[in-house]
Length: 305
Image (cartoon, rainbow, N blue to C red; front, side):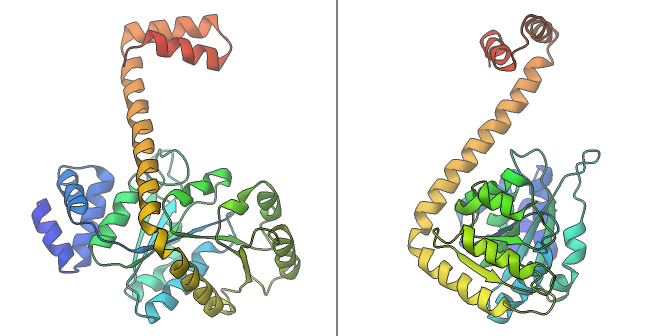
């Protein structure tokens, strides 16, 4: 199956071709270059909602409910769930895909991808996956990032709107808020409002975000409480941000180029250090300096890129 056949299948809305193209992009196989070139030649647009927060906060279940709500309002919805990579196989753990089975049953496109070796919680291939889904006609894409501390900030470089999810059983929630993540989200969610301690979590979030102007909602994905209100708030934020989309895409492209440069630099460094002569010099510098910064500076001067 060549790239032209895959792209024609995507235009017809056939999901097996969408899945084939995503696999091609993530594997960087022989078809990927032609597919990506077409995505840039004929770009489409979507609203991108990022969802992040500590592990166990109920992100996947919340996305399940929210995606179905957007679908019922005539949006064409896709979900990209970024899983931690297996350090042995490099593969996704597939936990999110299992939890979101209801969405695939409802014809909402769901794909789970490994975070790989990207510089944070988000995969380098994720941006091209988003472009592909936009090309296929999806006009609302929900991206779930791994809840991995400060790497949650990576979602800001991809999404238009960011929701940060907490629950009473994620004890680090308020500490994360205090640490400065109030700049990351457009809306903060106190999930699992039916659990003990939920009202205290909501009050704490309201207190710590009181001067930020950010929305704080109490929701329960178990009962569905607050999902309608969440939808209304998100659509208002999306509308308010619409005039700045072009500038946001420009900044996101700049961020993507920086990440690609970092990846290329890392690969090039690995290649250079695999040369026996360079590796010998590398070991010599290590034996002479215990300061990693000083050693790195010397290595950069010795190895020609």
